[in-house]
Length: 185
Image (cartoon, rainbow, N blue to C red; front, side):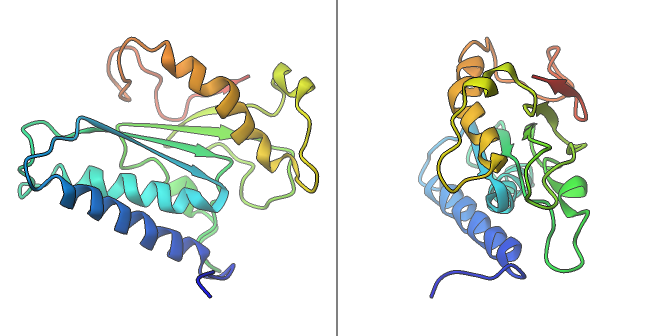
């Protein structure tokens, strides 16, 4: 009953992401403060994650936002994101995913059967985990394809790497990786 279709999944995801962002921002109206937020999306869930990040990024940088003096750092992590939006939106992910985030990361796998998931996103730092040595020990869950590998990699290794960060990164600051950087793992 609440499932969309292949034609509407991206739009449905964006509606969810916007609703989550509005809920978070509404909760701050009573004096709360948001210093940073991290939105993570897997496959077609990239549309929800990107829209949540976009909405928070844009609204906290508008002149009407007054919850705090400094807007929050908005991070976006996309795990093998599905990038087509509806029938005519084949280039949507490349043009939009990560645009409205202070730091956007894309974990890429290029040898799975899911369409529109196999190219680096230019507005993100891209970690290509297709040939990662850690994959040698990965046991593919029954009924799955390697489309799940970026999620497994991130949960096992990416999060651990992030814990070692001294500060939260922003594109263009403090030696942080730039949008469009591709790192082969």
